Length: 329
Ligand SMILES: [Zn+2]
Image (cartoon, rainbow, N blue to C red; front, side, top):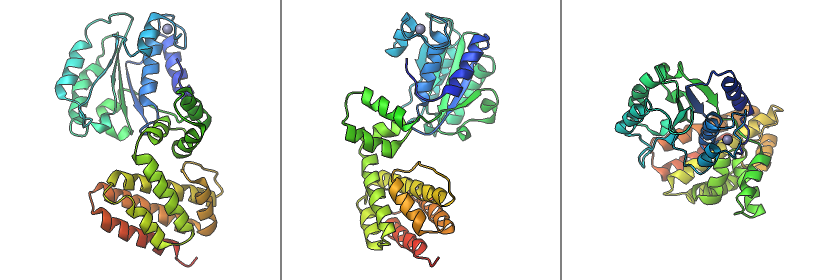
């Protein structure tokens, strides 16, 4: 069983297991695509492996069943299509948790993406609280969310909180090559866009939003270098009517501005999808202007989230960007 990055998380869990002090409730936080569910499954494998080694052996019956998502003692809660958990689903899970495991020593319950359960996250956590406070000896609950903020204080104070760690570009490449599905040039583009976030790389290869947003962000950032307001607006308008694409292009642009700002401060950072234009902007604008540009882009991401009129927003943003980048130094 292969997992990328997360060495610290795995060492911690493994040392707890070896001392017989298995954690009974874990929260895994980290951005979308960073492998929270993969880490949860790996932890389940560590707990359920029949060979009792520090790493799941990958060959025992338990590891095989987990690999095929068919282990009866690894139970993943299902949300509805909007990401919300039904209260009844979680109540049923809590009742099931008192029943002894089918195969091994533990029963591991995964409740992923609690942050997406916008309308029931609090209710769900209150239902889980009893189980987390007094778990049966065989029960392990793993919750995941994009950020710690999702969790109630009563929950976060009782769980082992882990942060999913990003992997390297080389890890992402190895993973994508292993799928035997993509050309080398597609893999290269996906890694430029997603870096150590394998989920983001896959979304780039399979989805519609990321490639379109990447196209806009790279075109827009080149237009910024040329101080070409018309071209910035033209690029934005290619996302007209496509809120998700426009929003993601702003996320990419904010990352470019952040990288440029870091470069200006002499910090070698590389989170953004366009390292060349980030370096160009760092050479063209001073630190204060880059900070202002970053802040402006973040403000507009919030505006898009608050359901503004997209066309008007694109118009005013391109004007404001030019106002910032054309300021006399
Ligand atoms: Zn095993």
